[in-house]
Amino acid sequence: MKHHRVLPAALLSAVVLAVLSGCAGLPSPQERFITARPAEATGRAAATDAVASMPRSNPAEPGPYRVAQFRYGSAHNPRRPEYAHAAVPTDAFDLSPFFDDMNRAFWGYDASETPVNGIVWYPVGDGPFPVFLIAHGNHNPASFSEPGYDYLGEMLASRGIVTVSVDQNMLNGNHRGENGARAILLLEHARTVLAMNDNPGTPLAGRLDTERVVLAGHSRGGEAAALAAMLNTHEHYPGDGTVELDYLLPIRGVISIAPVEGQYRPAGRELPVPDGVHFLVLHGSQDGDVNMHMGLRFFHRPGAHAAHRQAVWIYGADHSAFNSRWALNRDPVPSSPRLLLPVSAQQEAARVFISAFLEYAFDRDPDAARVAESPYQFADWLPPTEYRTQYRRPGVAYLNTFEDDDRFRSASLPGWQNSISDAESWRELRFGLTSDADSVFSIFGHAGTWGLEITWEADEDVGSYVVFRSETDDQPFAADAVAIDIVLAAWDTEQSFRPWLSVETVDGTRHGIGLESIQAIHEAPEVRILTNRNRHYVPQTIYIPLELIPGLEPGSELRAVELSIPRDADGRIIIPAVMFYGGGA
Image 1 (spheres, rainbow, N blue to C red):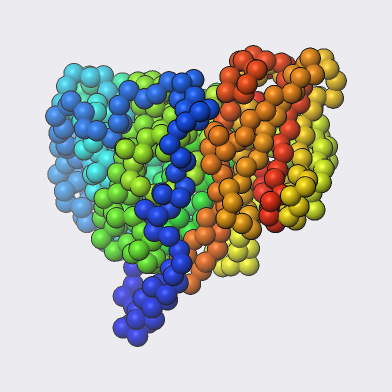
Image 2 (cartoon, helix red, strand yellow):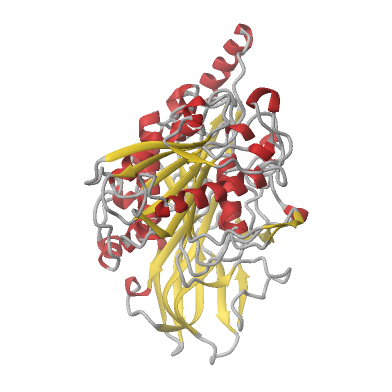
């Protein structure tokens, strides 16, 4: 995030007029909630809850613990005297192998003397308590950012989670390429805090669960948190092999809040997500800084098949309100207030999703994963707006991700193949995050994965069909569930989009279900930020337990899956992935 500049009065007036006039015809978050939320659960939709365990309680409710706070910091802190005299002293860290552009004239030190400063909210009790660390992003370095996660720290600590907001303001300003250093500094903070468990001179002595850590970050800090989990297992720093790393911290999960992606790619490579590390990304439609859902690229990277991955897109959320300090000025590229969630509502959404993630990442409530998977089932806990979620559960088997090769008939699952019929056009492509491919906002605009794009013209007498079939009868898949990611990129009618999913078992019988009975599928939402107006191609995961399909039960052996697409109007969809869950072939 960049710091804000004061605009001349005439320019400010022009911006305000553009913002207000540009939102005409676009719904407010409350209006999006009314149209996007599925109808009251009836029939098979009600059965979805019957086959799924539910979280124990609202994860954002204050817990039973009294909350205390302290700071830790290094002695040489000319700009931050509150850390120079902190309750827990820490050694400075030599960050110079990773970053050498520290503003010594402003801070009073260079990268070789980087202070390790942070704020800790902790539960008053014996523990042991798991540890959650969060790193802010880029902002005006003279306007300190780390106190801005107080709304998370107070709530999480009351629920028995030690929460740490780390100071990385010394890396803020007009820098580029420093996100590797942000990641290393976050790992150093995690190691420093965990060591307090063995230091009787700290308030955390003997109270930490040193086997359960989750890292988080916002904006550039969101990329840094993901990179930190990736670098945690490296023996050498990818940007310089002479620099040895030895962290190997017990990182259970990563949360990226409105992250950038691509500011640190050693040798141009994307670092994979470590297996077994849970991942959550949050992003808002009205983000006027990181204005596309870039965190989907982390979501789609290889790895982590043994963990949950969740991506939540929140209509009306912007960039700044995730930090209470930044929220005082909102975003550098503004949205009309009518299109924005109130700051308090956006922070409540963050509390719910983040706390739910921590509940299952820390093995306290495995059913809390349901909150991000089916947010409308928990509407009483969340502010009223539209949510679009994409997710993976542990044990996913990809029937097709459309990125293995350039041959359409080949599927990702060995022994299976694809076919398509009655479509105007179709192709595999690396699809963009928005409809405006020529916009300055779309320079980095791909979703980090491929998909099958299908286009059709209206014809009520026929449908379009996508079929995935085992090449031989001896290669069925024993599935407990089928899942599909869908982007309804265009749908030229007010009628509901009602695709039909059918499966064929090894005995040749077919069974089907209308996907709208599981989850409503709406056209890609239109978003306006300043004068830029386009559709955001946010995939939506639809998860179909086999027991919801009449005549089937978990473990049914499937040899074909077919998606039938209605052609009531002109339309276009993108399918990023089709998946199985269950025992396998």
